[in-house]
Length: 346
Image (cartoon, rainbow, N blue to C red):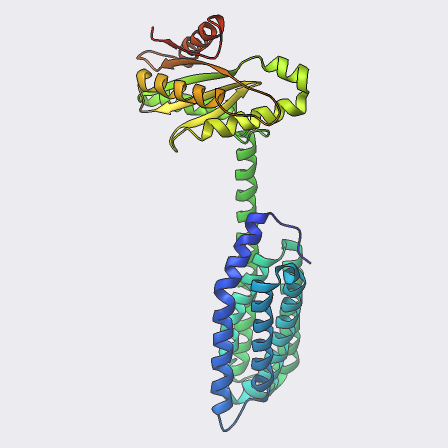
């Protein structure tokens, strides 16, 4: 009934259940206790409340001790709650509404139930289940409506169906809008992320650089270029080369602060944006990264070094002029024997 979903969403669902299932269990237990104390007990509640308690207990057990059963139990829970809701609504409308002029507290929980369905299921199944539930309720109401015509109960029932219909349409609309925004955000993230390393790509780096140029904030950049990377690909293969890029990324990130932005510029070249750091601090950081990279034992190759070109944003800089200075510094580091840091302060 449900689609396979990302691990992060699955974790969110577990947390959701971990908080709400005990609350539902408590509410059902209190409801059963209150019903049990009444002299004139509601036959439907005397069946429904213990049924819900058992369902919630099973769900809590699965949640904490048998997570591999969770998908099957989730489907069973949805079907069971739908059936319980149908039975309760049918009983209230056919046996109680005419005397009490109320649908009872049961109906207070139906909007929550509909929201759960849209959260737990994919949109197709959420629509099917909510539509089936609504159609059943509507059928019961239409069956009983002739007996209630002219009484306040008939208006209550009609208002209930219209309110539920509006709620479901609104819920579907909001869900659709939310999914559209999520898809747009995912596409935006994909457009700005390097698929191999997970770092911001050149497009994202360019955007951040342009922001720095517009605000004229203190900004330094570092070109990082892995030395002899072509030889690594030729000697060990492109798969090994990809692993080196990932490992290089991870080792570099270990040195950086949260506000530092490392991106993959292309191939074996990386770009590091350092906000609110002058060229002196940028050079010290580049040297720290260089040592960290060169001293690490890599899984696929014996050793690895990188060269660094450092430049600082100056008044009147354009994107090209800033990048050209960093590129010249990197070229100098390469020409002077690699595995070193060069600075362009012009």
